[in-house]
Length: 307
Image (cartoon, rainbow, N blue to C red; front, side, top):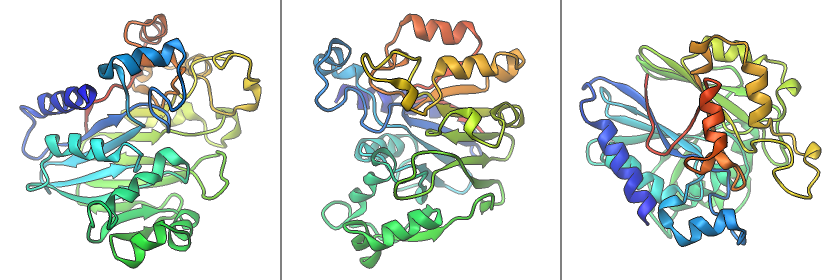
């Protein structure tokens, strides 16, 4: 697929000139769980990507690459993980770097089902560390086909706790924090990632900001990068559906809430996890221009952020 070759080229280009001891985040996917274009969507906004594979986008995922330890860590295992691991391999080759952890945010299809690629029908991996909150840990251990990955030791589950940092090495730590979301099977978390010089949060899925006891403005002020939920751009995006019943914060709402941040602080906000209807996926759209005009950013595959 053209998109994966383009993303791989971007990753390789971004990697040139990086210091031997650098730590960085790489964006591997930007779309909502089902990717873009979405299954059974044959409306004009999807048909453009069915006709032109270079316009397709993968489900949201990021990776952290640590040059000094030769480690790489994946955040969310998406249905597109096969292609995303290839793009990560281009940026940090498997023979030189080891995949030392997969951090899961929650139990919706775009965030954990890629674990299937570690199984006996595919890679047949050996003890890939998979970090999960207690309900997610129990879900994977107790339900097929995921429990087979555990029994065959394709993956090694490691339990997380809300607000408790995981020290990956002397330069890198990851801290999960609970966020409100539609938690049918598992809890939902975001992650704070602290590198040697900079920090980031990754919150691909959350309910309205007002439903969270934490003020997102304080989060943005406290980190260097905030990759946050951009599932829908604004109300009315889904045609005849009542979007008041959908709890994701619209990008338009998030920008209004964060507008009083300083120019430098607004530039820390990077929107990610876009539904197939979200015009932020469409290069050159008025919505992309509006985000940039207001001082915010939107994620693109291959984007690299130094930590």
